[in-house]
Structure formats: structure tokens, C-alpha cells
Image (cartoon, rainbow, N blue to C red; front, top):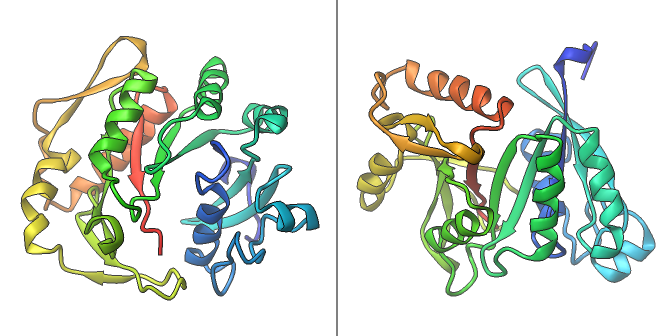
Length: 265
């Protein structure tokens, strides 16, 4: 990114246990922003973040790695941290220099102690962030079950900002609930998305889940609940910007915890 000013730089730390999908998420971000031409694979040892021979052999990250991507005139420094308990210090140190966190939860694995520990020390520095759910293409997984586990484990109320299109192995894309836009992803692992219409079978659920149909009210303990009705209808031009602004303020004040899902193709 050319002539990046300090105020346009954000450090984002990815936190979770081994196998949650942190490194794969970074690969997807790199592909989406055009930093790499094609997503790498942890299994094949072709990811940008895991480059040490030991990481290729063990198929896990053994130290924190950093990459920078450009998104809407902002430079995002993504810090991919190791998930093994042996490297706990690396993840903790990365959190102290970050502006926000991405807590990754694999729907088929649930919430593990490593994720809970990461939540605890990021809370001490009041680090805002977003939960990111992976693994929804596995058998006997669902967004509702994953959300319930997250809310119960961390005693919070989440705001869902995207929905998967399809279930388990039939997942083919996502719906962005803030913009009301649906995307399909090909099965070739390229990460290239195609804008599509929201499937008719999902329209009722999308309308029910859209954050634009609700207001935000703060509860004790830094959690939020959904209540009331916003002045902007979800189809109005001001809807997306209003909710981006509201979520940004909420994240900054550590009063909002968002939840996004990933299509694992």
C-alpha cells in the first residue's frame, strides 16, 4: 500500500486452537484482496504464513507470522498466531500490539480451552473483535449450534453478520446480512466469488436475522442484546453504512461481539 499513514494501519490478531482455520482464513483474505493469485493449502504446505520446514512437516503454525493487505484505503496487518498451548506466549504477545482480534471457532470442534484462554487475556486489554466460524461444511454442524456454544462459553450475546448458503457438504456461499448481498464460491479453492440472488428458501431467515431490523442495547459484562427496530429499513441505501458505523463504535467500546461465517471451499 503506497504512502500508508499511521492512522490508516490496523493490527488484527487471529486467535484460536490448532485446526480451527486461522492460517486458511488468512489465505482466503490474501486471495480476496489480490495479494496472492490463488489460495494456498496447509495440507500441501503452500500457505504464505507457514513457511518453516517444521510447519510444513507438522501442518501447524509454530510461531506468529504477519502479512499486510490493503482494504478500502486501510492497511491491515494480519497476525496469524500458533494455536498449540506450547506457544501460548506468542499469541499473548501479539494481542498486546493489536487493535482488534479475530477469534476463530471451528463448528465441528467447538470451543476449546485455548480459545477460552485467548478470550481471557484479550479481555484484560479490552481488545474488540469478531468471532469467525469455520468448518460448517462438516457433518452434523450448524451455525445455530456453533453460535449457542460461543454464547454459552463466553457468556455473551452475538450479532450474526453473515449466513451460510446451504448446510454441511452442500454449503456453496454466504449472505452478507449488513449489505443484503449473497455470494457463491466455486469448489476449485480459488476463493473467487460470484454475486447471486438470495435463494428463495433463505429470504425469510435473512429478513429475520438482518441486524437492520433491530436496535442495539448494552447489557452488563460487555455483551449486547438485540431489541427494538432500526429507523432504516434493510433495503434502504443508508442501512449498510448505518450498521457499519454502529458496529465500528461497538467494537471500539468493546460492547459488541460480531459473528461471521466462512464458506470453506
